[in-house]
Amino acid sequence: SSDLPNLFVHNDVSAMDEEEARLAAVLGGIEGAGKVQTMISRDSDDNIVGVLVIAEGADDITVMLKLLSATTTALGVDRQIVDVYTMK
Image (tube, rainbow, N blue to C red; front, side, top):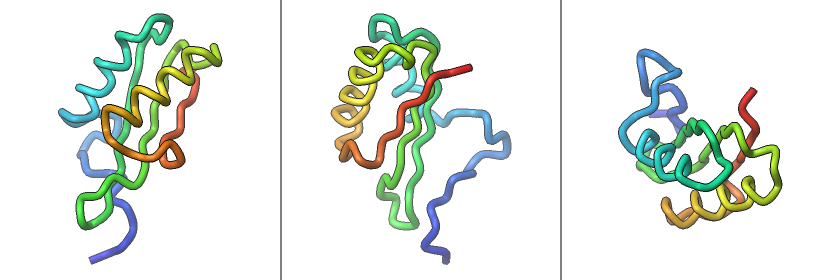
């Protein structure tokens, strides 16, 4: 078994799993966030090793910081493994 994160666990890599969809729905409730997509990467022991958040409103620094804070709280992870980007 590989120690690399299992980044592509779906047949359709654009599909979010239930946890990712739930996180995206919660984050989408943040004022100014707009449409949100998320990806959660786990290692072979099912520990979260990375979180990607892509949101329409992330170009606003206040929204971006709220998305970052909400993600770390919701998943119980360190900010250093969460990246937030603006959706094109």
